[in-house]
Length: 256
Image (cartoon, rainbow, N blue to C red):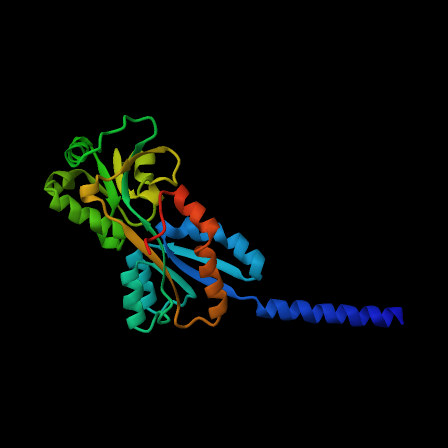
């Protein structure tokens, strides 16, 4: 009797575990680099609370848009609001699912131990760029939102031609790496990424006159099969763990 009862109990437990595994989703997230650490910060609590598995892949905003337009499948995308809206119009994003999560400005870094340049005013900022031997930022052609803005900003403040011979462009990723490894003296990029690398020193944000904030939004892929799981992940991204990571990286929640 005990053996039979044990077999029945074991079989029941096996069925329950099989059902739980079948219910567990694998959520694929495509995120811009600036938001990667924020997404990763909530993955452990999300996986523990739901039993779902999260796969995180990152690229520049433009790179992700191209991949999605080319047919790459995904469950959750973290992009700029304009890109989310455009992809929704093309049937790649589930309509009405955009949730603005964060905004971040642009700042300056130099190598750890180097003198901190004065960027407290627009004139001082321009002098710092002109005095630097090399200036790094994300290649606009790679689709990075910071690189696109910085390229235009340099033209607007009238020093693009002087900077061009000494610019060092990075094809996505962490532009501060070029400062850390000695390829550039100074780098411009999104504050959240500049503060995430050892070997560099964060100087500060751009002067208010030329500061630019990029907003990032989460949205659900039109082809996802696990909409409820993705909605739960978005709730985690809007929760306190993500907020703490945002603040630690110089980011903030968008104004309501």
